[in-house]
Length: 97
Image 1 (tube, one colour):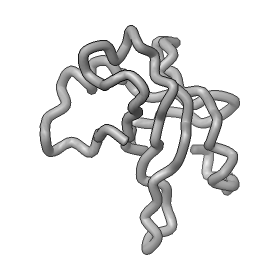
Image 2: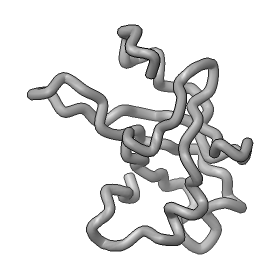
Image 3: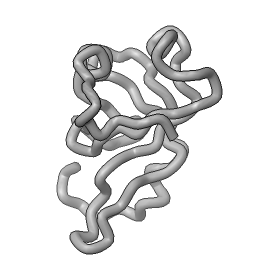
């Protein structure tokens, strides 16, 4: 997120952690806005079962809005994923994939 262009495929396979260091899952795919040529979300699978227990069926994933991404490096950091999930409503972009 430092403005340096990267190949989108480099995001796939990266581990995702909350900014508190809690493992969230692994990026399986990206959601794009082709008109604006930007990434709008990350499809995350291999989810931390403790983090998503009772929320997401085992073997499913989540779509994390890209605006929640705090940093992209060797791993991807997301802002307060636990608190955001608890406050999610039907209008939010998070969805089961």
